[in-house]
Image 1 (cartoon, protein in one colour):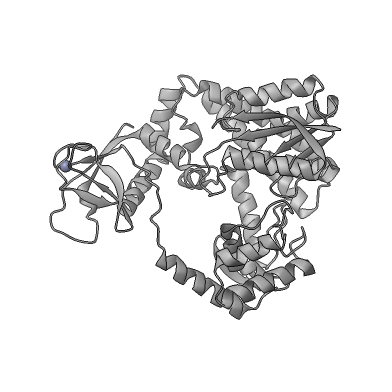
Image 2 (cartoon, rainbow, N blue to C red):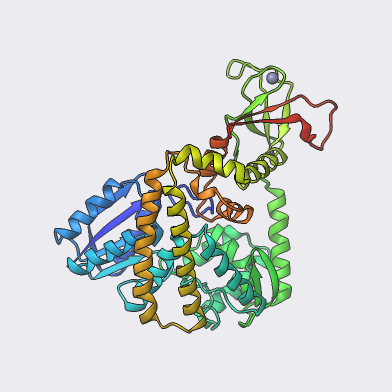
Length: 466
Ligand SMILES: [Zn+2]
């Protein structure tokens, strides 16, 4: 019997992959079952980042149980649920290897570090995840730009449905499924109905684990990839180097049909970056965030729950955009950076550590580039990456100890790196709100002078802390 530990963690995930612990666990259990493993213990941490270095009780408990020799295998939904810290990841691998855990599997993607190559990819993913908001990510992004321009695939270590892991070779059986799904959809079947057909036929997604659901199916069908088009940063940039599964015309028809139905069932996004920070300039009441006719708004509201004057409203998008721009500008100004640094780090230690950290990142990115270019072999890359990752982690830990709690240190720097940190994939709405809260106490909205659809920016009056 293979005894498996299951680890799950909630995280607040803006990319919409945000999976509840229940779903994570369900998928993990299924994976274990498919492999003939018996889940003998489940560990769950609530909402503790795998990145922040905060202690995660369930994660520590699992490590102790691994040391006690209780498991032969570990299952997690995705590696980033386990840890985003390279040193912690190395520690985990080390414990697994020393205490008899032979298998480690993730549901999402094909990363299976039970095998040699899997460990390498997992390590690189850990390294990349650890500094997604930093210079290395920018240089890798540039590399991706070049690949995109050449129509080459974006390698992710995960397989895309319809293609092999190389993202170039068509998997004929899956291509057949895609063509049939496209045909049904274009013949007028709904996404729900097409997904029901896939489920009834027992057809699974690329991982082989999950049933098709409408969001996954929608993403597949509208994906330019299956029409042989290279997409980059959300836009088609040209013909791809890989073969198409459906025709360009079908692709156009599918996307326009999806756009039509999206327009029909428009739902307002439930995202209010500035909740609790917006105040009415007429009566001083905190303004509520609520959609109005499908448009997100902040408004002063009357009634027992609100007690405002109900005279002032403002559309959320232009207000948020304005505030974000102002916040990023302030963060990238040397004066603000100095003020924050002075407040956070009474001595020069922090500055030295930051410099060290950037030097380490530069080294790490150079290594990754050398590996991508092929001037470095895997065997050379792995130990070097591990050494650097360990040092980065310890430097980060030292920096974190210096940080007095605003969490702003990683946002200081030139405009470009501040913007990159802001747009990093692991940046959640909550964290963005926290960053705003650290430098802006509130924003007052003055009444509109005359009714207009355009927002008069002079109505917006932020109050800055730094
Ligand atoms: Zn009011």
